Image (tube, rainbow, N blue to C red; front, side, top):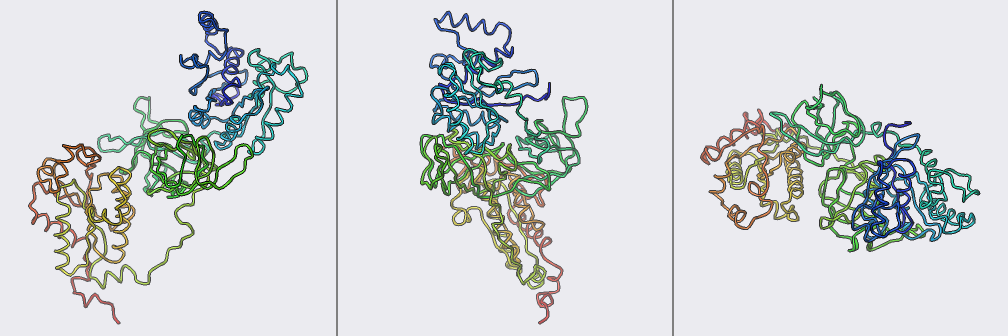
Amino acid sequence: MRDKRAFPIVVVGHVDHGKSTLVGRLLHDTGSLPEGRAEQLRVQSERRGLDFEFSFLLDSLQVERDQGITVDAAQIWFRTALRRYVIIDAPGHLEFLRNMVTGASAAEAAVLVVDAKAGVSEQTRRHGYLLGILGVRQVVVAVNKIDLIDNDETHFQAVADAVRDYLGGLGITPAAIVPLSARHGENVVDRGARTPWYAGPTLVEALDALTPRPPAEHGPLRLPVQDVYRLQDRRIIVGRIESGRVAVGDLVRFVPGSQTARVASIENWNGPAPATEAATGRSVALSFDHEVFVERGAIVSAADNAPRESHVVTVQLFWLDRQPLLPGDRLSLRFGTAEQRVTVEAIEAVIDVESLTAAPALALPQNAVGRARLTSVRPLAIDSFADSPRTGRGVLVRDHRIAGGFVVEDLPGQSRNLTAVDAPVTPEERTLRNGHGGGVLWLTGLSGSGKSTLAMRLLRGLTDRGRLAYVIDGDNIRQGLNRDLGFSPEDRAENVRRTAEVARLLADAGLIVIAALISPSAPQRAEARRIIGDRFHEVHVAADLAVCEERDPKGLYRRARADGLADFTGVSAPYDEPAAPDLRLDTGELGIAEATQMLLAFAEAAFVSEAAATGPEAARPPG
């Protein structure tokens, strides 16, 4: 075998152009069917009073046989003398194009089936365009049912020219255009006697001449995080490597964000010995040299070659939903293991699949292709399709249904040609003038644990001592800056990010910032620490759930229990207790006065400089 890896191809075409029959014939004539399978289907067909059809080899669902159409994508293996193939037989009926998006995205080449008598249909053009969007550039055209045009060479050439011209407009040059009859086996595996004028390859010969893509393991490391496990005192990150390689000792980065760590081990619980490296296609469980805080959907990459992060992405898409896509629509964007809410900022163009021209549009109707600009409140860590095909594509979801497939065309990135401007006042000067440094005390804990109460008492105590301090309370900031956010995990993450950015700016101004937020997710708090830096101090305001429910100052626990309040931390949503907070205050055991004094002492130790001990005048710079 020339290549041990099965070569994935997708078979596409109009519903009536004979795809399933062609695949069935291909399996039969290459000897790839289980022994007796064809005869079994022949008997079943006779019992039902039907002529034997090779399409029955694929259309195994009862509904498919009854309706005479293929409704799902199937994977079938066959082999030639040169290599193994896996066929992704994609649906052709208009209502089932949604399934084809999934099938074609995994293929390295395609067989485009065209009826010799019917010629190039609108659906043929749609499928061709979709292949172009998904980056499938190796295409063999099977002009099927050549017997229905009496094996006429002139008619075949007219169809071949039409297909060649259309694909050429997409930047695709067909590897071969083969006249064949799937029903009679003409030019599928064996050369047929009915087309003596054709000197090109058979379908199988054309497939064997295709070139597999370079192995994805030579590309950049992309490992979408599937899940995070806790194993004793270690966090184990699991996922499937989509491209590249990873080895013990590698420095990797987790995006979104800038956390880095070295791979400490590649777990191999069921194997004879621990692995030291892994490559594309392998599912792995990784541990690291220190604790990292990431969630499902993050990407593990090489530290020096990470996906770009952007709040804006331009995509080419194939829209499938009955409801048109409109500017302002909110959808879910699924790529890798991530899912994020996005808003359609603009529909930049709709593509006419007949003429391949782009025109401005206010909407994208069902089964149309076009280009749209999407925005997200959280940064998207995603590649352009040109840079990384495996991680530069995905689907759009509306009402829990796949509504479209897309590839990433452009990522503006975070900078947008912005340049940071340095302030003329340094942090050291502010520290001297204020008598203390700026920084952030991040109070996290369940609702009712006492965060806001402690924050306000600390503010009073610091102000009475002449310190410049400010409280960012979770409820208060949601009434202004973050009033557009709800309490879903995604919105909570954005709430934490925005709050951390504001806290960082205030700390830069020299203030002691007291941020009091539930902030239930450890990875989100880790992101806040990344944004703020060394001036971030995590304070766990700890109180058992029972204590918080007994207090219930806002009546939220009663509502959560009685009305099933969605996404309520501690009841219907989880809370990740800090593993190693800078300060832990058990407000179930401590009195409020004692807890305040402990917090005040911690703040003084963290932020008050030596200059404050000699008084403000001594701290003031000369002049």
